[in-house]
Length: 332
Ligand code: ADP
Image: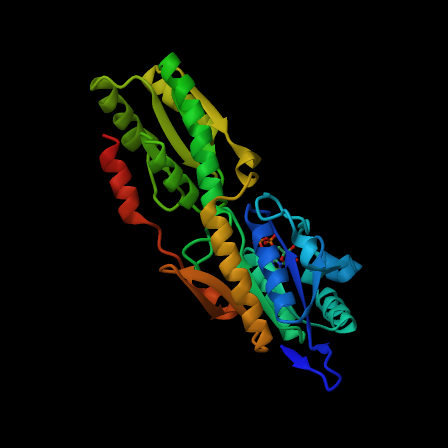
């Protein structure tokens, strides 16, 4: 909010802060940039908190200006650093953070992170500092949004990596079992598997029996002339090395396991991630400007929406059964 003072100067009415928390995700920088620029546009003071909630306890807070967020929209990771803060999970930690915000004149905080970070945002709001959460995670496991910031980039990265593996699999007539990230969620595995034409996609949401479901599928497609196979396994399923070993034992096909790991968390964000990060960052500041906290922002059916944090944490996200079924059909 900007109030022209009697002397004609602009009075800076309130300060907002922005932090990134939990696991990093490509597009977090684009969100930070949007928050900083929108807040400055509205005449607010803006602070960048480093290393998640920890920064509000240790005082790692920097004043941001328009140029603090130059040249970051295309960069993966987070220029504000991120961390997990056990101290913030204690009542004293939350109080310390809230007191520090009051000291700096911070009237609202934009928190970019996952479900855990949302819980922290709720605690800080209850301690008197209104917070708005933005979904930043490659896992897409946040129910209050169709897309999280970082998911699209991670899918594309995983797809390119699996494409590379497929080249060598094809050359050697091999089966490649590739584990992709996603914590307990199979969204990243499902989309990567569909995009890479995987023979089978194993996700925690859908129970499977390796011997009854996966092996017959491999042998059936082998009988039609297929000689190389991609099996995508979600991190939440685990046991990727064992799965590969069993496939080799039961089919006789030379089988290798690859765990993609942290390569999926980095890299320049895609168009989609940059755009949604920008839309959501803008919206978060609009909410705080109106004094509205304890909200999380999301994208539903291509529209920017917001929900009460508690309501958002209660929501469940249905697994994409239809896409899973399609993947099964087109990989015969
Ligand atoms: P993510 O936000 O990606 O889910 P974490 O679960 O690690 O990542 O949470 C990030 C930070 O949010 C934690 O280090 C902690 O400071 C805070 N946090 C996590 N869970 C809670 C909780 N239940 N209550 C309060 N704060 C939490």
